[in-house]
Image (spheres, rainbow, N blue to C red):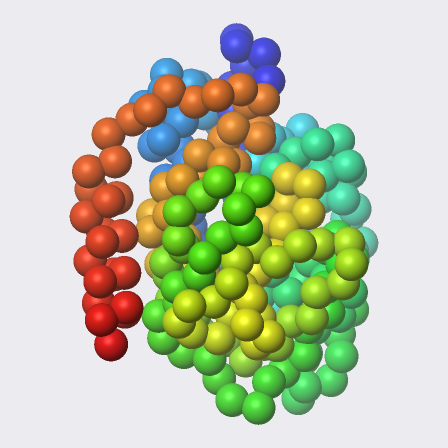
Length: 238
């Protein structure tokens, strides 16, 4: 990203998929970028609008079954997100948004619904809802500290050979196979709410680093560190 250009953050379908406070991920990215003297342009893309292809970081959140199905249909028809990722943009997809990125996911009655095929994953409805705190140890290649968040989903997600597990679960359910989330290239999928980037500022910086193509200056993480320690201590002491 050229030094005189704004960092373009694209928030996809807030009118459909913003149930669990995941818009906080947008706010965290904005704050951490501006603290490093970056200019930020945030684009809120409603489901009636085309997804712009010129973004640097794309975010999509969680939601209920019917909005999830509608979001998948519109993203498949639109195609802009695929073209942006093919160009090298970064992305964080959370919960329902994570499932949409795969080939299929479970609909209202558990029936398979087509995803958009951006990630090599497939999701189904599990036997019971996964609700509660989630702690996971990240793939070492990403050089991130332990992830913390909460989950609220019915999904079981199977990873194909085209992706790697984001992390190994220490507490909680995640994908349902001992792992949580996945990543491929500059795309990260996860079940973490909290919002995820407020609980895990290093993950926000990973996305910023991918988008800007450079190293990031350190910033004061006192507030984030306090939140992380409080949550991790509470979960791991059980």
